[in-house]
Length: 344
Image (cartoon, rainbow, N blue to C red; front, side, top):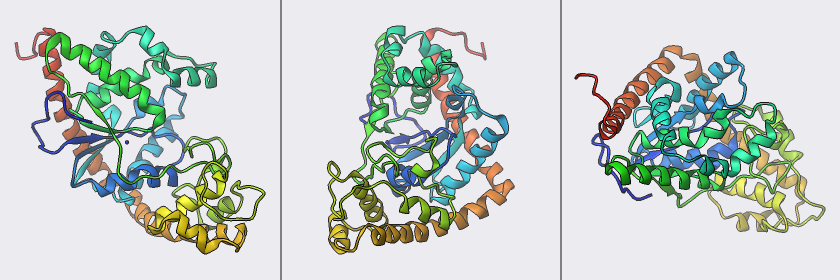
């Protein structure tokens, strides 16, 4: 990755689904199998917005040129993976100034004690001890602005973001209790079919695009020989049996999950098919499936990323749509707070 307790956006009768991703690290199969494929399947069912949250990314120091190129690469990968810009809004967060504007207002309705209890802040404070900035502390409030700006009903969330979402709901309800039903109260979106893809090197830890060890994930743009090398070196166990048992055999179970999602078969059936053939044979089979699956994505990515005019038009059109939607909510917020309207 919710019921609507506030005001629906007038632009659509569908429920609004929003999911942002940071333009950091490398887009990998965990992003696709765990999230993007579900978004693609539901583009007609929901009113979908997919911001690249570059304002969030700068809580950690970024190289400007790398950040700029990565944003464009991620947009191209979204489209290559099947997210249709004609049926959704793919935009860059910093192109909509209302995100920062609303974040300041919501700061005034958020308590420091609430932010200090956020588990992710505690973890990031330890990981970035030399750069414990206010943005790192205030991250959930900007996230609240991202979500509340668009009358979002549903937000796909993993276990690492559930605490943030609970805080966002509290902030929205606090504002609504004071000023009336200005904000839609978002709900967590839990897809019917999903896949939790784990690290190839630490199979009890979720695969991460920001992992410092590139052997832990398969990137969407990895060449075939590198994909095979990474899967062959995936950590498994000292046994020889192939079985789907996430507690006892997390490494093999993770590879079975990848194979199962890409083929649409139950992992238990796949385990029976390969049992007795050895880990090496099974790993090569997984590599074959992954390499074959990535061919059309890589081909479409190369087409999109070369077409600078197309990418520019997508971002320009989407920014205009996002700004129009966000502007409606900002006007309601300003009116509720008693700010003097610009036309006065």
